[in-house]
Amino acid sequence: MWRDRRILDLFGIELPIVQAPMAGANLSAMAIAVAEAGGLGSLPCATITPQQARQELTAIRRATSKPVNINFFCHTPPARDEGREQRWQAQLAAYYRELGLDPAAPAPASSRAPFDAALCELVEEMRPEVVSFHFGLPEKALLERVRATGAKIISSATTVQEARFLEDHGCDAIIAQGAEAGGHRGMFLTDDIATQVGTFALVPQVADAVKVPVIAAGGISDARGIAAALTLGASAVQIGTAYLFSPEAIVSAPHRAALRNAAARETALTNVFTGRPARGFVNRVMREVGPMSPLAPAFPLAGGALAPLKARSEPQGSEDFMSLWSGQAASLCREQPAGELTRRLAAEALARLSQD
Image: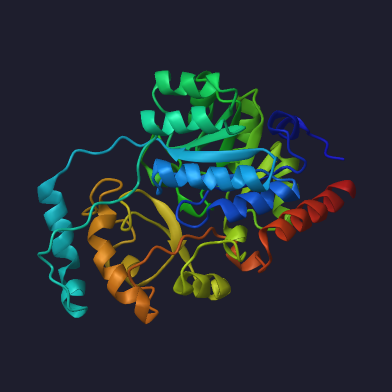
């Protein structure tokens, strides 16, 4: 039925749809629903502990025998720069006073952990069929341990150069992440967001540059996007924002309201929430401080100073100080359970491709 079966055969799935692992926005329930529908369900592990990841993976294994992907960040933890962090807190001080908080209080630590030996032990214990990375790849010794489990290894590329790097370092498939994608850029060989390429310009260039299959990501929310990506050389697509509309998504009430009002909202790349460029709906702090602030500490430290503001304002229904991750095609999405969404998108895309 599908013309290019490379990803289907590589991962052992039925439909060429990968559910994006959205750190903080999904856990086992979404991964199970997508896997049971025939796509590749994904569990993000960057914002949970190894023990929590083990519990979620155990829940997945109990609910489905289908292949699953688990995802990790590969950033290098930055050295603390107290001066920069103090300047960042000073930039936010007026907001602290507005909300009745002490601007001199120590900022909480951020909770985004890179892939390490403890997480590698989790992979060796649970043996997921696919392991994906964001921000490049882990060190060689850890990567070889992952490969020894039999897992297929994939990672995100935002340029042709990054795609070639990933192929040269043994990735079994490459996610070509276009500028339209919601959440963090997977960029790792450059930090210049001005060089970022749109999905439908990036995908055919990456497909021409590497021999491994390509997964298109960014701004793909309906059957038209899936069909276009497959026509341009992708073997599958990775979809994130569309799944945020599902009941399995773990998103706050303000974030869900922003998604429902997507047609009237703009997105932008911002570093104010974590210190690294990520796409989300523009809100107050992005407008007034950024969206790209030179004062924001390096990833993931910027988020610490914003955490008290979010904690104080979110219960009041405010979105002012929280990340509202979304890709550029949110207005094309429908509210639908993750499994139904997966099957519908695949069926509609196949119908379009069959007409060609």
